[in-house]
Length: 198
Image (cartoon, rainbow, N blue to C red; front, side, top):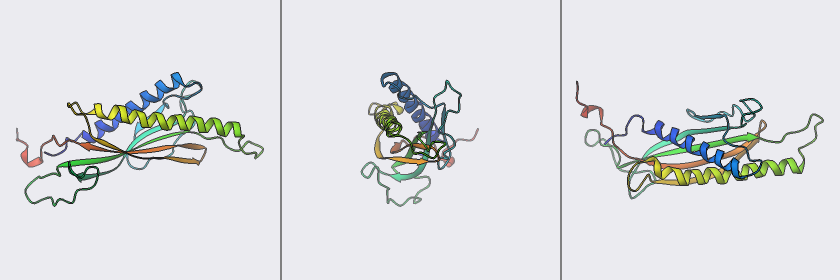
């Protein structure tokens, strides 16, 4: 069976919602930790560092949380999360046994910068920014571990492999993290030739 046309978008929307909820919960238990940024969205292609300040005004949470798709590729039960080398197209619409999707979760916050006098940020400012980043790293990682299985309503849940998480920046006053995760997509749609005309 082919993929449902909305399989990727529905999954990315679920992931951004899950991570946002986790950031909000963490802010309630870690003193001074910012919650989910006001600017939270699924984006097409490579993430633009549009904003890491407070886009919502003084009462909003600064930063930017995005989910994007890095790539999609054929895999198999035995090879997941590796790419499959099975030859396709031998017979009609024969999709790979498993389709893998690599997602990128990016979270940006404000980074301490030079003062108006050209002085570098203090060690206290850098230490505070480092703590926020470190808490964000754990929160995003845990959110994906806990939420992804439930994004597929089956007895076994969704299969996925956590990829690399790395820090990004500081650049342009922003610093943050990028977390990659490869997710198995079930084939449950119809091939165009299989559809019945009305």
